[in-house]
Length: 484
Image (cartoon, rainbow, N blue to C red; front, side, top):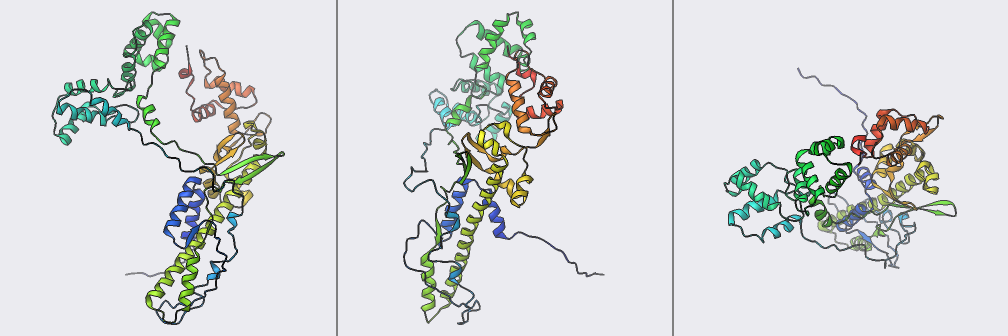
């Protein structure tokens, strides 16, 4: 038997406008500029630039009945809600440090030659049969951006058979691979790091240190990677200076031969700071970057369209549909302008609270002055949700007298020093990094010794915490920091 029941639930849902606003807050300046361009293209009721029309907007309160009747509801369209003859959007009242005749923001980039094309051009200089050309092109196409072939030759053989209908032997494929490995940059086409380094070494001029370096890689690669220098000295019966010269030969090689070529053809990402902090007479001045926010206003033509509809005595169905379309576009344009205003107010409130909390740092540039600060600290000050603060911190940059910084670097947990004071974990990481940089490289400090040193400096931290901070700083263990 079916049983019916009535349940009451209290749900909280974000409106589509609120969701879009949250997304807009998260956008950095460059992506926000693209969002503006998209909206201007999609909504004809929205225009950019100064509105210099001196004519006053005419009131056009038209009545429209969605049922198709001639009666028109005066509350349906009220242009006063959208248009004003002298109103300037509040988000544009802040100073803009860039003028219209500043240098062009759009910087052209040369397309260049791709890494694969660079290798293929070299292959074309060899005298090969048609089948050999297909195989070598396939091998070149299997090389990744770092310059390596990461696949087994057996798998490449299968792909050649299935995709190119070419059946060859592993020996023939190996021979053609050696040909590919003769291409520039040196080391390209290697299947692993060891092979990559050996290819580069064998192209260098003959000398004792080069021969020793080749022997080290061929016979004791694991000892070299793990920096077991004592075992290398015993195995090759050389002096410490000779071993040092051999290792220097290896350290000068490029472990990613394709990286430099590929990187040179990529468009460098330009960081546009969202905020600027200046020191004016000992006080901090915060400005919001509005360079990529054009002046927006409602199209005056839409007002004329509505006025024309009002003056028309014979109102057709198509005209009524057009009025409904106009109203939707006006609603969207008005919301978008309001959203920009709210976005910039939110960004300004967040950043202002951050610089007030970290005032000593922004005045001095000394990272030891950074105070412990979490998202909730700022959220409580500005009375906003933690998620909103997170959206601002994770994707925005601020220009300071000490460089352009990602805002989230100013956030850190707190720890107690030996005097019971709260200190930022970032301050501790900086001290840890300084201690490691000043250590004796022949005998690098272990995590236990680092913990003892930091304790002596007034930061009682456990060894496992030292290990965690060291990994976050991308610093290897003591054994891998050892140098000759």
